[in-house]
Length: 298
Image (cartoon, rainbow, N blue to C red; front, side):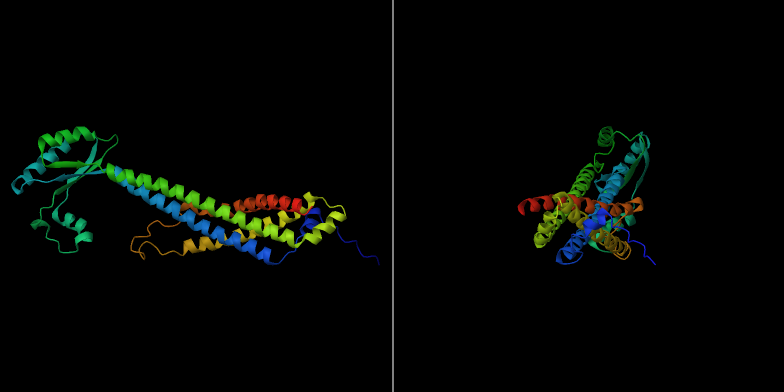
């Protein structure tokens, strides 16, 4: 009985056999890709979360304003009534209200502790203003307040919004730069590993050349092997990073400091793009290193 002929290996399979499937270079490539992708996941999560938080604070401040009234005790109520009357006739204001002593005490408690005697301290009267759409004319309101209540000062939070907007932009830029640096470091490590593998297999490359193998065939073997190693390591690193981000403490457990940290909604899909990007980086880094090393071995 004649046994069926074995199916010939494909060119891609034969090319993969040129590179040893194990060894220090394999572990180095896989570990580097995994570790760098893990760091990328956290850099991406921190960047997106910090930007979201800064934007949320900026938007909240953009919709509200505060009027601070500093006046003699006998004038406080008179000027407060004048301010409320002015706000009631100002277009572009959705709502307004004067904060009472309990609310003022709650605002100051995180800074001065409980039991603050608000009524015995010269603390300004605060009036909260929420703008409508379209908003009010802040400069016109300031002029009206100066005429009706000389001790009133309108704070539309512009000096708070600008630093927050700048911080959000810089955090996003920092995240992009961090991911670019991590990608560059991964490319450098994979390049070193590829060159080391080529140098180690110099005798094999010499024999392949003797039997007629072209440099493009040899380079393709190394590129394919190292790209698959990087893709595998990056997938493991991305999965570990997602697990780490999901395991971060909730906002309640962290006392509010980590509010919004991590990914939300469709943001959880961003880390899934990292393994293909790592494979692309490994492909071009290994290809460049392979042809350079092959020219040196000529």
